[in-house]
Length: 526
Image 1 (cartoon, rainbow, N blue to C red):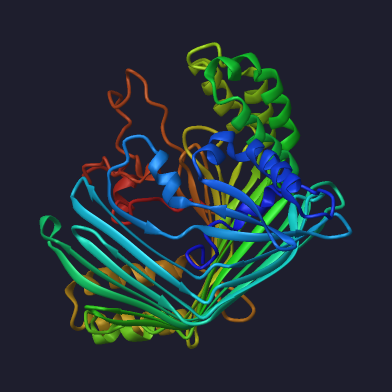
Image 2: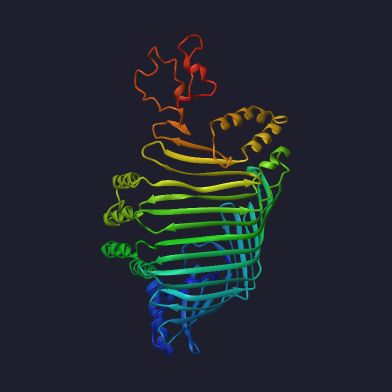
C-alpha cells in the first residue's frame, strides 16, 4: 500500500558513494550530488538539507517548505514535520540508510466543490536498509510500523482508513542483462476503509466499508534500468530552461534510448484474506481475494497480463430472486490481457523523429502513421483460461481477438460443466419470472449448438471474422456482411437474407427460405 510506505522512501535512491569519513565537506559533497536530481533551489529554499549527525549524515526533506514554493498554492492549512533519512557510508561503497518515519500531517484547501481536507498519522515507523550506488537500488531494506490512520473529507464524500501493524521488505541484485532485479513484499494487518458518499445531484447517499484482517503485496521486477532513469532525472533538472532543453535534445534522445526497455518485466499482486465489503444491499465477501498485474518492458513482442481470483465468495441475496442463488459464483479465476505488443518500434521511431523546435514536436501525420504501424503488427487481446464456479457448475472460457481491419477477428472457446443444472435452475425461474420465461427457450437453443466432450462438458468454439461472419463449432451462424453499393436492396432477389441475420421475405412465396429461419435470425450452413 503506497499510503503505508514512507513518503520520501525514494529520496535515498540518489545517494552517491563518498569516502568513509563523515564531516562537513562530505555533507557538502552529498548536497551537491543530490542537487543534480532535485535542483539547487531545493537546498536554497530549505526543501532539502544535509547535515552531520555523529557518524552519519542526516538528509532532511521539508515538505512544508516545498509546498510554500509552489506557485498559486491555495492551501488554507498545512502541517507536516520534516522527514529525515540517516545515511552512513560503508567500507564497500554502499550506504546504510535508516529512518524513523513516524509522522503526522494535515492540510485543508478549497476545491471546486467546497472545502477539502486530509490528515494521516503513521505510528512507530522504522526503516533499515542498504543502498548500493553502483546499482542505484536498495540491495536490502526492511520497514515496519505499528499502525496508520488517514481521514479524507470532501464536499460529497469522506473516507476513514486505518491499519494495524505492517512490515515490508525489498531486495535487489544486478540483472544478467543490465539493470536491476528486485523483489518486494508487504503485509498489513487489520485494514479498514470506511467510505460515505452523499451526492444529492446524483441521488447517491450510502456508506461502504472495506476490511480485511490481512492485506499482502508482492512485487518483482527484472532488468529495471535504475541508473539510466536517474540520468534522465538529472538531465531534466539541468535543462529546466526551455531554450537549453531544445539545444540539448540530442542528448535527451540518447538518454531516452539508453533507458529502454525501462524494465524487462514487472509483476505485482495484491492479496486480501477474509475480505468483506459492507454495503446498503448487504455484505459481499471472499475467503481469499487477489488481483495481479504484469507487464513486459518496451519490447517488440510485449505482453500485459491481469488476473482476478476469488474463492469462498459470498454475495447478498436481498435484491435477487431466490431461484438465482444456485447460479451465483462462489469461485472465480479470470485471466486477460494483451500480447504481441510492439512498443519498441513505436518508442524508437518517436524518439528519433521528435523535434522540440517544432510545434507540435511530432506531426499529426507521423502520429497517425505510428498508430497504423502499431496495428499492422497485429496486437492481440487475450483471454487466458478463466473459470467461474458454483458447486458442480463451472463455466470456462479462453480466446483471443485481433483487429486486422475496422472489425475484429476473434476466437472464443466456452465450455460448461453442469449445463443441465443451469437449465433446471432457469426453468424454475421461468415459473415466477416473466423475463426468464421469455429467455428460457434461448438457453435450450444454446445447448443445441454445443459439442459434448468426453467428460460430459458442453463446448462452444465461436469464431467471428472481420468480414462479419460468425461460426459456432464449425456451423455458420451468420454469413459475411454484404458489400453495400448504390444498387443495394433494389434487385428482385432480396427476399433471402437469412444468412446475414435478417429476414426480408414476405413469407408468401416458395422461394422465401430466409423466412424459415427468420425466427432464429440466421441460417445454419454446415
